[in-house]
Length: 377
Image (cartoon, rainbow, N blue to C red):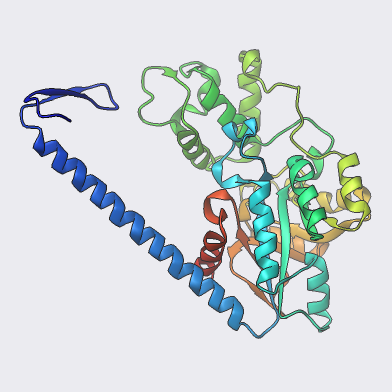
């Protein structure tokens, strides 16, 4: 600002404030910048400490150890699909390549998850450090954007499939809800939105929900997880019947098809594990038959699907129940959880720990090592 005695400043909320003494706001701005700088320095320092801790733990580990890296969607930075996706679900192809290169630089041997488990069970020799790359849900972008990186780097991987979504144009309810909330103005007083209304931001009070930001929509997704998946999907269908224009476009496919699965498995580079039939969270299934269908039925689907399928299960959202565990142990040889950490030789194969990775927590080598370090605390 200049030295004129009175000024108008437009803040982000549209209000104007008048000052008769200009040095005072300058001091406040300087203080704010100073606080922001201190926070940035502290955050950077913490990241460096965690990265150093992660690197040290890995380098000093002597007992055969397996790191399981978990991804979901692999999308380029300019992909339009990022606009309606949870930030914690996305990794860029460049970031994936960085992870593979860093793992190898650390001396880790990329290995198929089921191969490491087989060797561990049989007490065969294991590498000091191994890394298994895994992808949850069976997104088509795993084929479009991750597969080429895996081939170039000669890196094996496991994709956990939701079997009843293969060869369909369906997608998961969080993506459908995000699309609704971030691209449309909704008349939420309509009965069709009764199920959604209690989970919206408190600022939405006038009966009309204008497009939310991606972060606001992500918070709504978290609150909706108090409901079971099938109920949410049924309610979404009710919305689409009442408002056909809001229904997902049928012009694109989000999930892998059989041809893509076959191509990726041909060279033996990609194998497939089980992730239930419909991605229903097991702790929300009160019907025993439905629980059996999601776990045992998925096993049947996997056996019929491909020779590249492996008897490893992955819990949707990490949700586990006693009955679910019993069914998993009956039909599979191992299971992945969402618990964070590494796996030692001889570990419980039904309690595999992983590191969930995305652009936000592993965009650089330091960030990846910090995420590993934080998970090993």
